[in-house]
Amino acid sequence: MNNVDFTELLLKKKYIEKFEKFQELSYKVYDLMNYNDMFTDKDRAACAECGEFVTFGITEDEQIRVHEAHFCRKRFCMMCQWRKSEKQFSNCLKLSERLSAQGYRFLHLVLTVPNCKGGAELVKTIKNMNKAFGLFIKNKEIKRAFKGILRCLELSYNYDSFSFHPHFHCLVAVKKSYFTNNRQYIKYDRLRELWSKAYKSKEPLQISISTIKGDDNIGFAEVSKYCLKPLDFTKGTTVQNAYVLYTLAYTLKGTRFQQSYGVIKTELAEIKEQNERAEIIKQMYDYVWDYREHRYKERGVKNSE
Image (cartoon, rainbow, N blue to C red):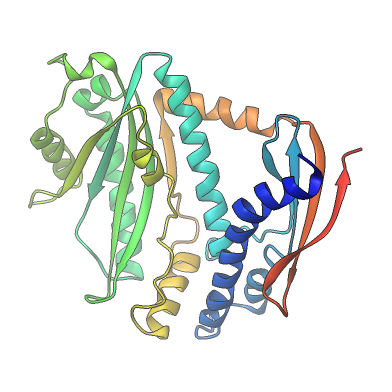
């Protein structure tokens, strides 16, 4: 396959269009930032300039990698949140392969709490959730059954009640014997009881749990999503969406959205280390964002030195 065909097939159709989609979203985010004085000119500039150029590299085994780019890495940036989500999903698939080979299977556990308002109430709720989760995983039943956990905090916004819905998506590694060993297996009602007790809730809290099959990527995708679902610009008012964006950027600044434990923590550390090792790039493709035409244009193709 010649260079032009390879570029059109694997870059234009698979990658460039995705990047263009999130560049378009950045315009809407930029407009929302103008409705809140807490966003600085530096914040707006970071959003406007994010992804203005991207260099894709093709490895020797014909895999596509972002070799170099200008990304702002801000939490309010939809482009950077998407990129982070993609990396997490890729790591989760590698994690699945490694731990499955060691005799583990996976559960998708969702732990919820009642909706809350933004500001101090949201901060307090998430603080209480983190504290409760610490108590939850220290329980002897949980420690015996769950050999590894990847916990991800996700926020959704209810436009009707003007409230936030914080909840944990958890990827849980268990031994294959978990499903047949009465000393390990934890029934739904018991899990719900343990979570409600850890959160010190007077009313039973809602949870859900399901088994992730070997060929089912949905569970892995769930724990790899954006910490805040992309804003639905078809719902609510501009002021509402500006408020939700500000909450993610500043109210929850410093909040840790992901945490890993046990065998999952160990394996993810090795996976990330492998990802950081230099790959041999045989060719690179430069793309630059055209602000007038709202699309990426190829700036040049070059061989690696």
